[in-house]
Amino acid sequence: MRSHPIITTERLELRAFTEDDLEALVAIAGDAETMRYIAGVPATREQWRVRLAEMIARFDERSLGLMAVVVRDTGELIGRCGFQIRIVDAQEELEISCFLRRDMWGRGFAQEIGRALLDHGFRVLGRSRLISMIDPANAASIRAVEKAGGVFWKETDYRDKRALVYARVR
Image 1: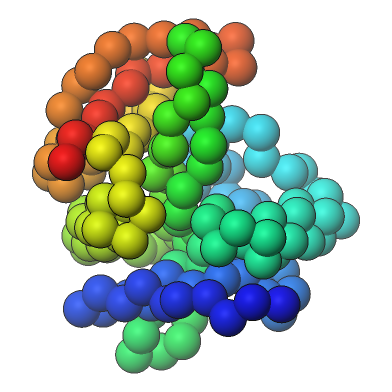
Image 2: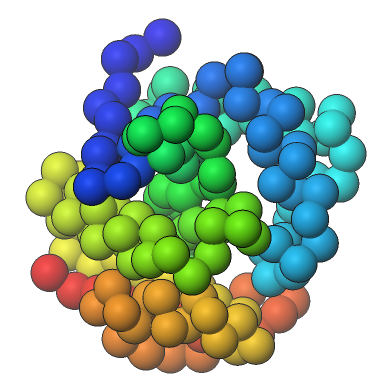
């Protein structure tokens, strides 16, 4: 297992997942409103156990992937964020994605995460463009991406659904 960098912000730590994160992830995913716009979410604890193992392995292989969002002051896991490779209109893109536990909404965490991931993606990963794909009905995520500097790029079909693609170019 590699040693992975931890991305810290003023209030958060973004770190590689561990097996100990399973119960917190299952609890977050159990809230239908939190997961309303998230595609391909496991439905059961066992499916989450498998998905968590996949996220850990993928991160171990590439030091790139999905990370746990942890409140620095309490150590509490409140969500998932990170980078995912997506094929958008036959072109490979690196997407920033995030979901947070509902009681953490409206506190500016999404913008804080977005700024940290943009910085990491541009400065550390050397990317020249990063994207976020958002369900057109998800007004809160659109606002968060725009506040973090994302600009509407295009609309596309992804996994048989419409998605708005926001981009940030270095």
